[in-house]
Length: 86
Image (cartoon, rainbow, N blue to C red; front, side):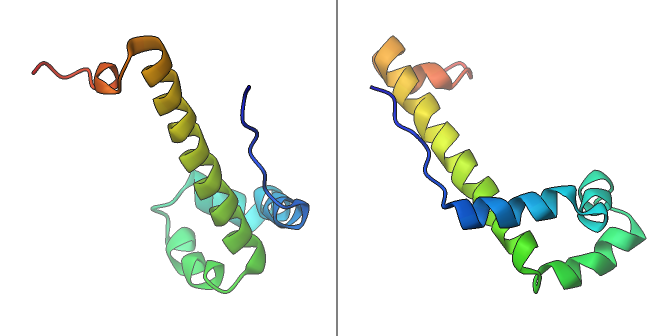
């Protein structure tokens, strides 16, 4: 049985606003620009940007957990995920 990722709808809607915000789009596409460096001060106070960051962290954690479970299922352990020679 597959697990589903549960993110509250309110948080998802707020993250969506950040995703379509022109200021945030510019900041994500050009993180080293002058604009992005100055806009990062505003992002700490923006509830939409915070929701976007939280949703992103939750999804990354969920995906890495799912990948680890899949490796354990298919390979019998997580050692198959590390491609470096031992």
